[in-house]
Image 1 (cartoon, helix red, strand yellow):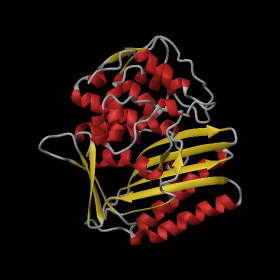
Image 2 (cartoon, helix red, strand yellow; image 1 turned 180 degrees about the vertical axis):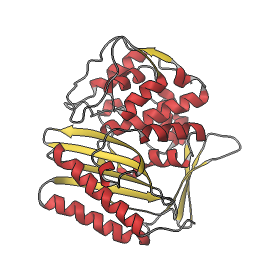
Image 3 (cartoon, helix red, strand yellow; image 1 turned 90 degrees about the vertical axis):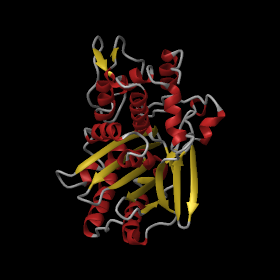
Length: 337
């Protein structure tokens, strides 16, 4: 696959789409040919939907297997979380919220407003991470490539949750930049990666997983909790990247230093791979988070998306939902199939 000819223009285009909040990220991937829309096939068999990766002559690897219907075993959890969401909406803290849970032992799922669209913000750094890991598969050594950071990107630097950042004048490997992008959610590292990404591979991450390619002309990329969970699920399953690169991706996500929200709702010492994202405008702020939670032998993926008037309130709502999910899953272990 060819690299984008003018990589600098990619960074300019991406960051020209930033709104007043620096975490309102929108990524682009220009469709190079119509075949990319056929990179995935979905077949319903009985009560299950099986998604397979197309584009090969002799094989069709399994990406995801989902029951068409919500798990009855998770009904109590759904009622509990829905109650939390409705209570916060009644007191005016929340405009809307959704959650999607996928547990791996019984292959069940549940959620509330699972198809409602939210703005992902920095959650979009995860598909970029996956794209770079795919580049590393196709061209081993990509992660060790050295890139110079010569100039600060022209970004709106107002953020609600600040962390660490790369420094002008230094050189970084792609591996180090990915760490800054995921662990610290560093926008400067992200922009440098944007300028060096293979745009075709980035687009194929979406089409391969059955999602629409982000379009910069649209000015946004709304996505649902159910859809976004696909990125985390394929990392855990090792069904898109090979085992080595899936492990690299999940490990980086386990180092995310955002300790509010979903992470705060888990008992101390719980292993979790997660990423958060901020977005929204003055009259409505959004905060979302998605995670692989390693609960003994009952791991699950949880994605929570919220929209309200005050950022300061949203982490606590996500924390409360996360705690409710963990408690339910711990007290109601699901035997492995």
